[in-house]
View 1 (cartoon, rainbow, N blue to C red):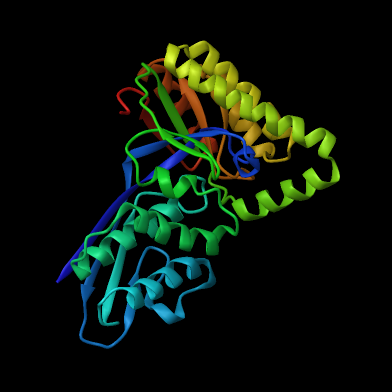
View 2 (cartoon, rainbow, N blue to C red):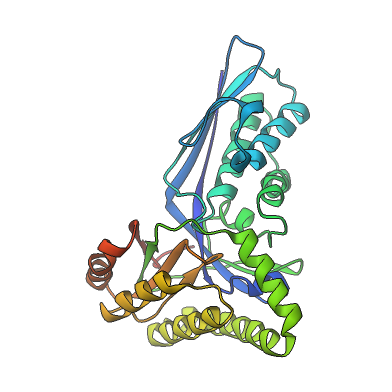
Length: 309
């Protein structure tokens, strides 16, 4: 018996960090960058995990995988299956880069174990279980990662208020640039919370500005206004720098991408490392940006913004 679950990554277009404080954010799915989980029965009365980062008994998982391990244990109790199976995870998503790797893995595991148990998986349960592992990993996630890795459409999101899928058909491309530095969303969120408590008169208006930029992004996407979208990216990056979400290596990559023809380049996700996104008007511009940053980055992807429906 084999159970299979497949999901994909995501990036924030705009609104990261501010979304934690009730401001809107926009995320887009990365449909071609996938995570697959396979569950197969095994003779021994144990649960084992096979991944790029650990192979062995589930109860010996390293601390970095504690959220995934807890999710598998919970599902093994909630579903009518014997605890004698192996979970294999294959993923194109790098970890701790702001591309939704942990949410995609949690969702893929949930889908695979329900498939293995031959039980239909309601959408509400899929989101519940995905967020279960996300809370262990990130502490206080907004919940938008769990939604986006399970969606084929962009998401306009306000925490605890609004989850609105919408269509994008923009003749442009995003270059996703992996800095090669592991981000730490939990630490970045914590540090920003402390900064907000210490300097509310400075931080609160910046978070509100990020929320306003998110609203303007939605309008720019509707109007297919690439120049406005590029300016929004640049303004958002300036704010993220001021909120200490960036660092020198990320700033250098931003400069390289902009010099190579990006209309605007910004951090996506938690920052302090992770990935950047650069807006390119054409595939050729996207390739030029990729070439310009290749020596200073880990890897890149080119994502079309056309026909995300």
